[in-house]
Image (cartoon, rainbow over all chains, first blue to last red):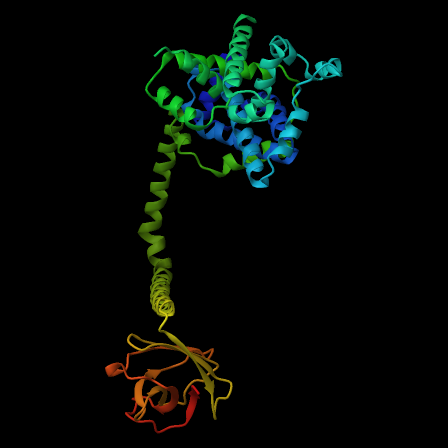
Length: 183
Length: 261
């Protein structure tokens, strides 16, 4: 599947619109919920989705399969653009705290209470993120879904920047191991 | 220096959470070429992608795909012309176009379209001339406005109001006047001067009125005119406009249409 994906990008680079349509059908259903989760508004998410696939069409010639799977290529792109959008909105609205609170409410950083319910919602993501200690999971989710930078995370969870950095590093190390060992 | 600090930077960078100086520092490090960090970034991107891949799928609104396909169709990509199989098609198409083109050029166009082409060329030339004239007029206007604005920045510049008199009570005017540099007069609601005549501006100080130039107004009754400084920098007390023969006269003879108080 990964090879087939890379082939599609190569065909897109050669100007093949049909390859693009297939590529879109394959990746949009993964990328769209991610964007939606980050930007929150459906209209914004549609905009970002279009932007991301337009860039993929335009930049297809620069794709190097040795540097990552097509999935990672698209998902990284989608996350980056979605976070850009969230940060721009945050700057525009000049209200810093409210969106953070909203983002936190949306981010699945659950204490004890309704953990079971949320776990069901989140499906299999728990299997990877769920294996992390709570403190590591929290910082990664704040960056991944709320688009916070390390400094913002430190302010948010009231921990020293160094602590945040360490948690991010350890958390990502763990996630990389999970992915490497999973089939 | 060990590599360890960069492991942390790479992880944070992969998450998109690196900010400030550290981000710049890490990007410099990457630009210098670091296989370890490249690998960390690559693996991190795959791991983070796996999080999204583990989530339930959702079908995006169909109009996004439609819009993208339209957008792509609208851009004629030069990449399309490159693939091998199309080369033959292009060769055939080009040859056909050449044959058709030759037939047209040789007879058809020459006999039937020559007159029209000539007419179009004349129209295009006329249009070009008009555009050039318009552009020159606009540049001139901009230069006047610029000069006026420059004058207004100078605290010694005065703005004098002109009032309509006798034959043209509706007329109004302003003089922007600098005692050393001279100035500009702007008039409005002034009807065109009668045939064979023009408006002449006068500066009046202690002695006789001094001629300060002739000007015309456009169809909407507006006109501007640059006023040279008065020799010797003498004080001007009154500005006035009269109707005079279009060649201009050394002393006012006609009716006064505008004057300052």
